Image 1 (tube, rainbow, N blue to C red):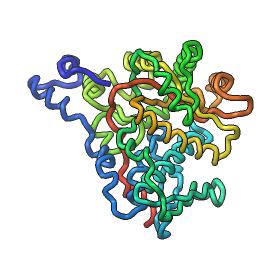
Image 2: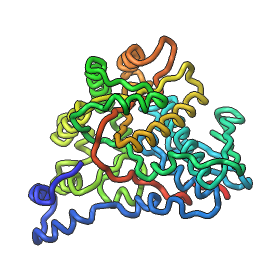
Image 3: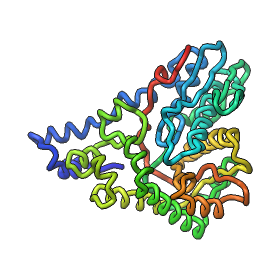
Image 4: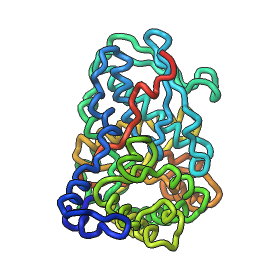
Length: 368
């Protein structure tokens, strides 16, 4: 989300007084949370192979940017991955399905990065059941580099309106090995409506919206202090915060102007979608969910390579009672009977966006 410096300055008022326009301009020019983005610059700076791979793995996409991974490095040549249960999303992800998919993204990104150093990684998924480690990953020499490694640092989840042009048939074909691509007008229109309706359910259901608002980080200082959750930063949004137009309380009040502005922004973003990518699975075990995450990560890297943008819109796939009607509609539209839709994402040509904040690798190492 961008705004010209002049327009942003003109909106500042009510909640802040600036001595001079140059002071306001200086403020707006320094809103990047550099500390929270450092893991993107330190990725690949570790000599030890596991830490080298993990420094990229922590950049993986994950729901609500919770970064639910903890690793144990006490055993030489192994990474024991655990889910940090303090980062669960009980309201919007009551069965932890989406969090497990995020951990699958983490494992695949770790594997790709390890291969760059010549290491193959074998993953033993939930070796002692669901209450134990998510995976025990063993590093052994002998892997060839993965071509998708070069796309890691440019990968994003683009939460912006896409350009008003179709995804070329050749690119749709290129992505066919990674996901089902929907680009025909009628099903695209139906999915635009479904994704907006589902988002509105999440946004107007008190306990699900409260979960999201509690995870919102308002402005540079909050983002640097807690580089997880939903980051609301940059000149445009911080201008609205200073003007009192964007507040945590307002986001919980559907009648507030800030909430209504958010609805309009999201409505416009979802409407600007020329295609969708879908991942389904025949079963819905934890292993299936991990595999869906690994597939989504590779899809996201491939879309990056092709110059496309990808943005998960998973509200209709959430499994709480208020979402049941939209969950059923999504499965009727996108899956064979008995199959599970694991991921749904917007696909198109989007603008360049900033990296998502991350906790440093050292904070994610439990032992070793």
